[in-house]
Image 1: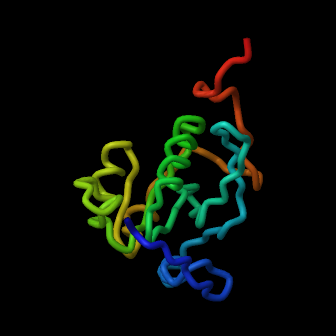
Image 2: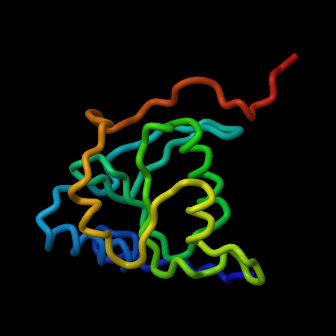
Image 3: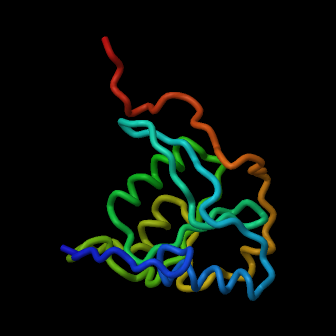
Amino acid sequence: MHSYVKPKKVGIYRSSSEKRVSKQLKKNNIKFTYEKVKIEWEDLYYRKYTPDFILENNIIIEVKGYFKVSDRRKQLYIKEQNPDLDIRFVFDNSKAKIYKGSKTTYASWCTKYGFLYCDLEIPKEWFKEKNKLNIKNNIILFKGINPRRRKNV
C-alpha cells in the first residue's frame, strides 16, 4: 500500500508539479485560470470539484503526482455527469501503478476510461486544440440525478 505524503504547497500552487505546469503555460504564453472554476457533481453526497487549470480553450488540466482511488472515482463520476467537459491529466509518472501489486498503471486507467494524459509537461498540440464547450461562469452546475443514488420507496 502506498504511504501518501501530502504535497508541500509551493506559493499559490498545491504542489511542485502544479507549479511546473504553470511555468510551462506561462512560457508558452497560454492563458489559463488556476482553481477558479467549481464543477458540481454528486456521488452519495452533493460536492464541488475545483480543477487545477483551465486553458483558454476550456481544456481542463488535472495535475497528479499520486492518483488516489478517491480521485479516480471522483473523475469517473464527473465524466459521467458532465460528458461535455474535456478533462486531461498531467502525471509525474503515468507508468506508476494505481496500487502496489496492480497491473494497472495511471496510463492504462486513463486509456480504459477515455481520458487523455501526458507526463510532466502538457503537449503543445493541446494548446492549439479547439474546444466547443464555453465555460463562462466560475461554476458548472450539476444537472440531473445521479443514476447510482438509491431511490427512496
